[in-house]
View (tube, rainbow, N blue to C red):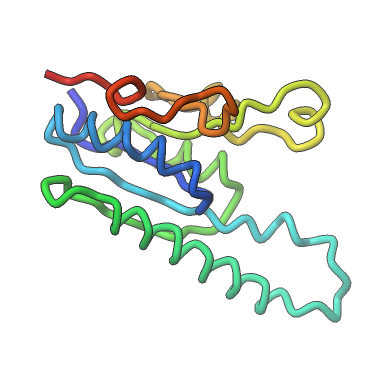
Length: 158
């Protein structure tokens, strides 16, 4: 059913929970995992001109490389994993890579923000859910009540 599962990462440890789900699904469907980190340089456009945008871009790219390297470290040996560090609007880039025949499923974490926080910060996950032409599985990654027990929270695949 799935040949490729797209997993966007922001480099946070919480995203590892979403990766667990993706790894289980990849194993069940013999799918490849594609992990991407999107450098959002546009978010720094309001900085003073004397700020070296190249330096910021380089720092963000290094952060992205560390994030995808961490995903590779976590990947079980029996799962094929591809990684990429890309630039652009995170939600737009994720949707561009979530296409039938490209990646047929997106698995991504959501921080569960609501109210004013969501209004002010926006939600990459929400925009992806609304615009992706393929299914999006969201995994809440920061619920304080959530017990992280592999048997309870991982996708059951037989």
